[in-house]
Amino acid sequence: MWGFGIVTALSVFIAVAFHVVLAQSEFQLDRLSRQTAVAQRRYEHARLSVAQLGSPARIVARAEQLGMEPADDIRYLTAPIDVAPGDVGSGGGGSSTPTEDPTGEPGGEWEKVKRHLAAQP
Image (tube, rainbow, N blue to C red):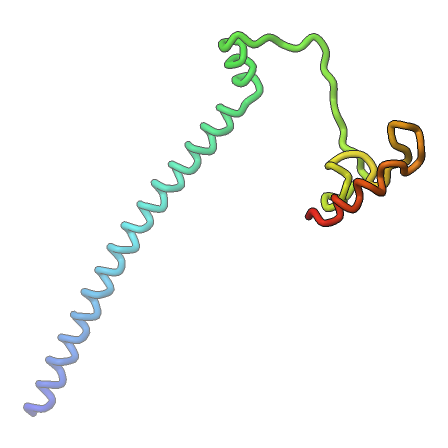
């Protein structure tokens, strides 16, 4: 009889302890949910601010405040498609194998310059 009473009391104590731990975990989960909601609102506000600050209308207005004026004509530059980013000797533009040097000779100065450029990454 005493053993049954002790086991019953111990079972109730364990159940109460488990319930306390469960309630504490639920409070922690609620706190984390609130923090997540606040962080999401802050993130959305920051994205809105970035979008507003980067809008073309705002940039034009700020440029006018600084005294800038629109250009008379607009020129668009395009990079050649046939040049790979790692082409040696291309200088970032044009073909990697020149067709002629300023003197008009095909490949004239290229051989002199190429040995210096080949060692460069």
